[in-house]
Length: 217
Image 1: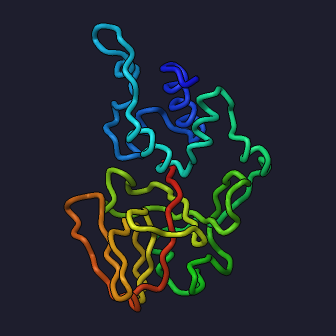
Image 2: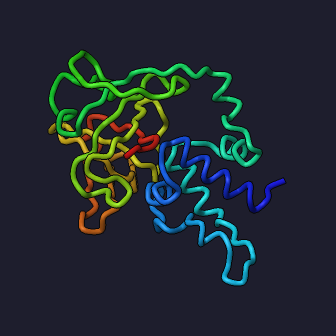
């Protein structure tokens, strides 16, 4: 049964799994940092206050998790069954800066890292072998991604409207954006920070696009 205490415990566990505080998890999901504070879990008259389904959906998305994994945490399981069955070995994946990623020789035409000479970061071994990490520069995705944050990217993951993505243009510019619209002719990319305008590119001016799975501070 999904009790009030177990729901909040699952949120705390999800934050801990990704090495964040509950406020850090809220910020990562684009919510007010106080959303999951202890003081928000009960009303002034002592009645239990439940987190919204929207906020739960956002933290699941922001951490690259699934509802099944979150449900396992509600049940008190420390790890989701599918994560256990895939093994717990840690793997090292490439870590590049956005500016570095824009240089020649680091990626193939599909957006997969090639060659050597990059730094590395250790991630759980259950992830897709194609994932890699990029260090964010700039302010266009604040407060979701801040300068210096590390985003985990998967070129093999399907990309849909509304997804957070990394895009490399034919001119070598690499950027973290939100895919707002994609047609047969154009790609429209938005920013979280309202100070940065929406950008539109012709399809042929995009080298590749890869989905952002989650980010870590």
